[in-house]
Image (cartoon, rainbow, N blue to C red; front, side, top):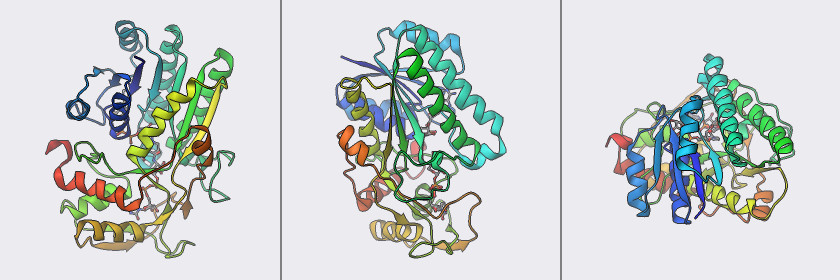
Amino acid sequence: MKKILVTGGAGYIGSHTCVELLDSGYEVVIVDDLSNSELEPMKRIKALTGKSLSFHQVNILDKDALNAVFEKEGNIDAVIHFAALKAVGESVEQPLRYYHNNITGSLTLFEVMQDHAVSKIVFSSSATVYGDPETIPLTEKAPIQATNPYGQTKAMMEQILMDTGETYDWDVIILRYFNPVGAHPSGEIGEDPNYPNNLLPFVSQVAVGLREHVTIFGDDYDTPDGTGVRDYIHVVDLAKAHVKSLEKFATTDQETLVYNIGTGVGYSVKEMVETFREVSGKEIKTVTGPRRSGDIATCIADSSLANTDLKWTAEYDLKAMIESAWNWQSKYPNGYKG
Ligand code: NAD
Ligand code: WQD
């Protein structure tokens, strides 16, 4: 059985990916410092899959501790690297913290991988590397022009991995996620932010009564209804793209492969709120405010390369994404705290 080390496996996307990995017959080793997550999802992943996993509370910046994990676990076939800080606004306020955690942490991980002859990695990148795109939908060939420190860490990591892949003959798959949303259909695991940075967790918290209203960040964009348009992707579809990436390693000898992971369909802020109202039956008050600094009008993926090359296609539509988000939020209004 193949053993996969998952950094950041206790987090939102990581926890869903661990379920898919265990369901697909992989052995899972999680490394997470729990700086933005909790232990509870570990129990729920085990309950959902009926499988055990190995968890290490370790910061990837701690090389000795990371080395000890690789030594103890032995025979790691590949790494899926989720661990990172991810809030765009916070990265503008605390660039050094973001560069240190995301770049130095990743470099430390790669050095430990190299020391243990582990040479396959799937990396979490983001559509944010494209900045404000000139052409929609975005193919992987679009220029890289990140506009904030968080996005820069992703662009830099991509370059570091491309160089590493070429020089040391690593197999690297870079997945550029568009806007991940939703939760596991069971409602047992989901996104659990203290203060949401993203639209859908905010809408969910308003629907469940934790917050009073959603602020729409600008309704004067050059889009059909004036609000921002994004390519939302169900987190379970995204998780499955990681399993497909591991399968791809068996059939390729290319050092670095890059894929956009989205649906190819864009929805506006107003459409997202309206669909949430329909699904939840809740009122969901909105207030229109000014544009959020750094936001763009439209971001939609061309994921045809992932469709053909990874044999991966997004299966969940918008309604299913929002139903799963609402199922999780209404079952556990305070997330993992109950
Ligand atoms: P998350 O915060 O829920 O998960 C990240 C996990 O990494 C957390 O459990 C956190 O505790 C852990 N972590 C952070 N720094 C660490 C360190 N130094 N050592 C060990 N563990 C550490 O975030 P997520 O939404 O699941 O995102 C996962 C990955 O996907 C990140 O790399 C993120 O940048 C990327 N991404 C996320 C989105 C999104 O909208 N959620 C979009 C594109 C890309
Ligand atoms: C979506 C739309 C907002 C909140 C971010 C990161 C990106 C990636 C995914 C990590 C936009 C509008 C939002 C609110 C609103 N993360 N909005 N009111 O900005 O597309 O992408 O998350 O890699 O890097 O930048 O996602 O969910 O924040 O916003 O009107 O309270 O909703 O203006 O049009 P975004 P988002």
